[in-house]
Length: 332
Image 1 (cartoon, helix red, strand yellow):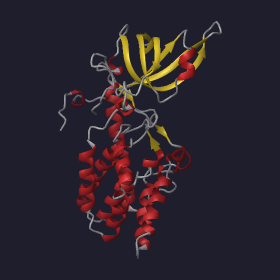
Image 2 (cartoon, one colour):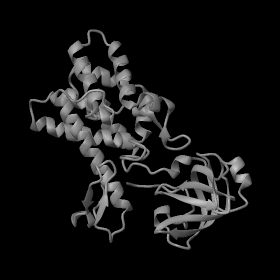
Image 3 (tube, helix red, strand yellow):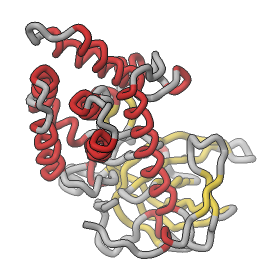
Image 4 (cartoon, helix red, strand yellow):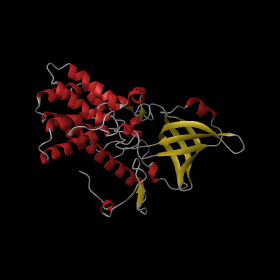
């Protein structure tokens, strides 16, 4: 994963901080609140982030103006020192203020970005759509992705908030990774309806373009919280299907089922379990790609001296870094 830091060149990335490092630079403000000292007096607590990680920062006095003027999502300038408590880093702040538009013209630079560029992702996406020869399925894909504002959001939207592909561009990276695997699996298992599987893979998370936003910070939208990306995606695709004359009712059911069942269980957000071979394959591809990405995210944040780590959403299981995982690998 390539990251772009919206900080001065000499400033370390958050994940590289050491005790007593002096911090002077720009960050994205994730949250701001007050807590109470043992003597009953308040102190300020904020969450700061750059493209590498988040860190908590505290200001013990003189924070009245900051509390009044700052909001989550602001770009801020801070001056402070890194401290460690119970092996956890934090920043003790001397100064925090809102950054100007001239100082920070684009807050998205504080977010981690997918290694896959939007241009290359767009080329791969449209090339995959061209391989879908079923006329009806190709029409649905065109109606969705030829909508340029929607496609732009698809190329920028994160794949999730915390669990996997939580980067700008993570959604299309996740989708294309799955689609490439689906293409290979369809060749290996000829009983699969290849075009249906590819179409379902490209559309399975389309609802995330309306579920997630990184303005002002990476979080769920109100529509995302109320409806969820599976419902939003099924509604969006159904709307496009209804505009296609003589679209097969059976194909409609099959395609919508892929979207509705892709997370596998009601407890995971799917209203139905996978009941077709294509839906089962899509579900396992989604699990595979999301867990591999989550594994890599955790690996990047884990010290080299630590052999085992816990993977989020893995039922408390622990995993071992293999020796191959510790070798330096080139990125193409």
